[in-house]
Structure formats: structure tokens, C-alpha cells
Amino acid sequence: MNHYRSLRIALLGAGSVGSQVARLLIEQQHELAARVGAPLELVGIGVRDVDAKRDVELPRELLTDDLETLVAGADIVVELLGGIEPARTLLLEALAAGADVVTANKALVAAHGPELFEAAAVVGAHVAYEAAVGGAIPIIRPLEQSLAGDRVTRVMGIVNGTTNFILDRMHTEGSSLEDALATATALGYAEADPTADIEGFDAASKATILASLAFHTEVPADQVHREGITGVTDAMVQQAERGGRVLKLVAICERVAGEDGADRVSARVHPVSLPGTHPLAAVHEAMNAIFVTAESAGDLMFYGAGAGGPETASAVLGDLVSMARRHVAGGPGMPVSTHANLGLAPFADVLARHELALTVADRPGVLARIAGLLSEHGVSVESVRQDPSDGSASLVLGTHTASEGRIASVLEALEQQDDVERIDSVIRLID
Ligand SMILES: NC(=O)C1=CN([C@@H]2O[C@H](COP(=O)(O)OP(=O)(O)OC[C@H]3O[C@@H](n4cnc5c(N)ncnc54)[C@H](O)[C@@H]3O)[C@@H](O)[C@H]2O)C=CC1
Ligand SMILES: N[C@@H](CC=O)C(=O)O
Ligand code: NA
Image (cartoon, rainbow, N blue to C red; front, side, top):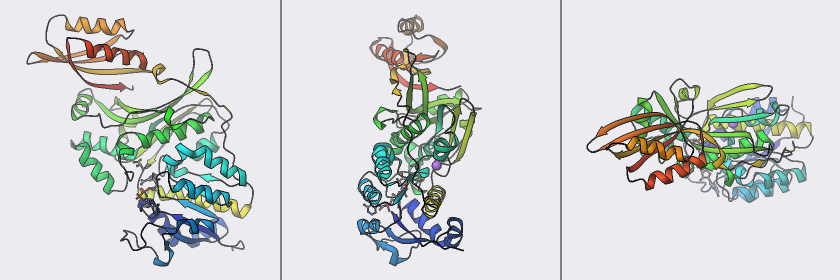
């Protein structure tokens, strides 16, 4: 039986995720109340246009375009608007009034997390954001709580459903990036502005969040090296396939030892080419998979739906139940841990193997000259493939492990080389 008063839930946004959260809150209200020990009363749903047509039918009397007033009376505010403003201001107002906050907004948490956490700490409230990374996959809570006693060394994986969907369709169906993006958008996976997905901003926001949690360090979003998938061509997809490989967009967050012996954090997002037998190669459609390596726990793998309305709503409701239980039981929100305060490793120091595809003049000694140029920059060649065609040749060079800085200077030098007609592609290799 519930003896606690109803908890007032204000929902901001009724798009792909928000409409599903509203539906589930209404359909499962008795079950949720039993789990929390108090009824969860959806007091309003903040929308732009109360008369807009929606896929999910929502009670008209709950819809309002006055988001400020809605937030003012709430115990828990669930933000599913996306973007920075007005989400940031509304959540700061909610926290200042003592409400807990649940959000799926990785862009906001990555850019303004510390400000929100600080505002929550002042009033003993909490900001929960499980849905912000990996959609339905529990990954925030494992890093924040389950692994709080371990020393995480690496978090790596596929964290953007839209780009995984696109690359998967390019491989399996020969789709174009544009067509596959249109399908991903129709399925509710893409951001309101899908540039965030395809240019890697969304994955970089998630890398910021993962690295900050894993390494107990504030990692500013602009310190995450970011490359999206707009440079991935059909030719690159085919070239990967010829080698039995698959292209994926990955986020890699690592604790690395600097030359002075001090640990630093490296966080980066870019496409990689990995063997068809790699576990990440089996992550299809909009699924996500995240590997966490910790000193005592060893390797852990988290896999599931990284995007989608109902899937993401599951993580939002999980946070909501948890926040609601805290209201019933009492006690302050959990503090955010940034005690390690590690420095950030320069991207130029990151080590990787690369595959360079070049179109070169088909004349004697080219290969030797190019290999010599790489060697002058401290990069050694591990493998070479050459296909002659009409006076020029396509050359695919696999390098041994080299720093990103050395590879950048090799690419600059290749641009100047008379033998090199063009650099067709550069992709990092994962084994
Ligand atoms: N769609 C997905 O698979 C996932 C989305 N997220 C995050 O969840 C949040 C919501 O995403 P979606 O539901 O996909 O977006 P959406 O674009 O489908 O929904 C957002 C809704 O908020 C409304 N909105 C935006 N600004 C508003 C304002 N100022 N006043 C009133 N209404 C406003 C929009 O009109 C839209 O209906 C975003 O932060 C997104 O990054 C997180 C994980 C997965
Ligand atoms: N647009 C995002 C949604 C989930 O975070 C994605 O495609 O992963
Ligand atoms: Na999640």
C-alpha cells in the first residue's frame, strides 16, 4: 500500500522518447507506484504546440506550452527536449527549487554537466542521465556505482546508433549514407539535427560523459578528438570488405601514462576498420556495445539498443523510479566524483595502426620512395597492396603502430609528393 503522497512528475518534450515515456508512465502507473511506494503523478507534458499531431496519443489536458510553470511545481523533472537551451535553464530552475532531474540529453550533460551537478549538490538533489549514453543499456550506473571500487583503464565501443545503422546499411545493402540516414531518422534514432550523429558530435558527447565517469575527472567536451562518418566513402567500405573487415564509428576513452609517468585521459571518436570476427563487427543496426576494462574486474561488455523511443524510455523510467524512491526514502542525491582530476593526453600522442589508400603514378621506384618517406617520419610499413590501372596505381599501405602526430606529418608530406596523385582514404585499424 502507498502511504507517501503522490510525486509530481513534469515531462518536458513529447518527441520520439518523451512520447514513449508519457505512454509508459500512464500505462504502467499502478506497477510503478507499487515499485516506488508512492504514486507517480504525471502533472504535465511540455510541448511546443499542444495541437500538433502526434504518433502517440497523449491526454490533451496534460499538454502545455508553458514549460516554466510546469517545472516550477514538480518533484522530478524529466527533460527530453534535446539541445542546450531552454533545457539548461529549465533544469537549473528545477534544481534550484529542489527537484530531481532525469535527462537523456548527452549534449547538455557533456557541455554543462558540472554546472548542473553543482546546482543539484547545493540543494541535495540529483541529476540522473542513464539514457544519455547507450540508450537502454545500463552503463552510467555501472560506471558510477558498480565499478566505483575498481580502477577503470579503458572504455571503448559503439555509442551512436544512427551512425552504426548507416555504416551497417552501407556494408550489408550498399545503401548511400543519405538513404540510410533518412531511414534512421524515420525510425526515431537520429538527433533532431542529424549533423550531431554523422559528424560525431553525439558520440563525442557520450565519450565526454564516459571518460568523466570512468576516470573521476572532468573531461571538457572540446577536448575529445572527433571525426564523424561523412568522410566514409563506398570505396572505403568496399576496401574494408576486400580485407574481411568492417567500418564502425567508435569512441575510445583511455587512461594512459604520460612521459612524466603521470596518468592522463585520452578520449576520441573516429571511424575504425576492424576484422569481421571482432565482437563489434556483430553489432548491427542501431545497437550499441561498450567494452569496459577495469584492473580488478577485467573485461566487461555492455550490449543493447543504443537508440529508439521505447528503448530509451526504459532507461529514463529506470532513473525516474530511482529518483522517486529517493524522495520516498529521503537522503541527498549522490555526489559526483571528479577527485582524480587527471590531465588530458594530446591526440598527437595517441598510438594506432593506420591504413592509407593512395592513388600514385605507376612508375618505377614509387613504392620505395613512399616507404622511404614514411620511414623518414618514423612510420614503418607493415603491408602493401598495389593495383595498377591506366597510368596510375592504387596503393594501400598498412602501417605499424605509430603516433597520430607522426601520421599527420606523413600525410602532409604525401600531399607534397609528386608521385602521389591523391590520398584516397585514411582509416585506423583495430585488431
Ligand atoms: N531518440 C533516441 O533514440 C535517443 C534520444 N536521446 C536524447 O533524448 C532527447 C530527446 O530525443 P528525441 O525524443 O529523439 O527528440 P525529438 O526531436 O523526437 O523530441 C524532442 C521534442 O521536444 C520538443 N521541443 C524541443 N524544444 C522545445 C521547447 N523549447 N519547448 C517545447 N518543446 C520542445 C520538440 O518539438 C520535440 O517534439 C535528446 O536529448 C536526445 O539526444 C537519448 C538517447 C536515445
Ligand atoms: N541519435 C542518437 C540517439 C541515442 O543516443 C544515436 O543515434 O545514438
Ligand atoms: Na544507458
